Image (tube, rainbow, N blue to C red; front, side, top):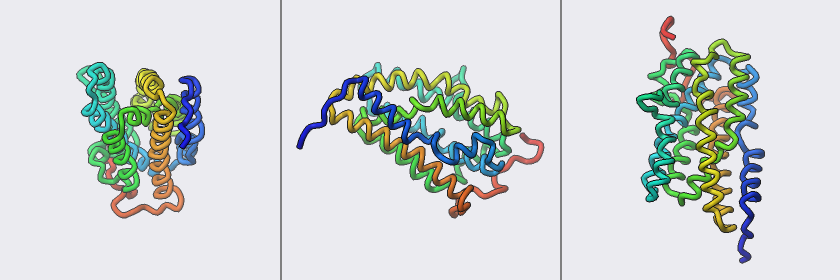
Length: 253
């Protein structure tokens, strides 16, 4: 069997970026609907509920990654990702910011945090990502995080689209996305360099690229489930959120 040719770092980076251009979930119909103002209030709520499950599992994914890292320097750098989501004394963290968004769209933050109404497919996809990072070689685990290469564009589009089209959108409710515009670049700069440095054979480059494809599949499949349940054919599976559940009492927002 012929060994895979090793690409230069620049060639390999271009390969990774092409994966995002073709497969990142900014191309999904649900995001076009959301950003254009085409979602109903309940469709927005369903998105907020389901995306919370992903947000809440990201620090768990990073903790699983750190449990396998023997290099203290890598642990020091990586643990800031947990702090960005869980928060610190000085930083409320992404999870709390997401729950502010939940409250702004009329949901009870405690209900959202319970994850009771999350779609089964969302849970399967997100849990698969956590298990992937826990079990796969470190190179593949880091490579899977490189969807952050493409995140600033979707965050900027989301801020613009939500502000233009939804009454709930303001600086407070959109704080999660504004903060990610500042946080994500530092994470991805480190992660990309680490992958380019460590994917030093054709075989490792193939594995890293496959990991990034897997992560784009995780993100895409979440939106497929959301679209199917709440847009078309609007078939909500048993146990998932139904209109009217988990709402704030009137005047509580």
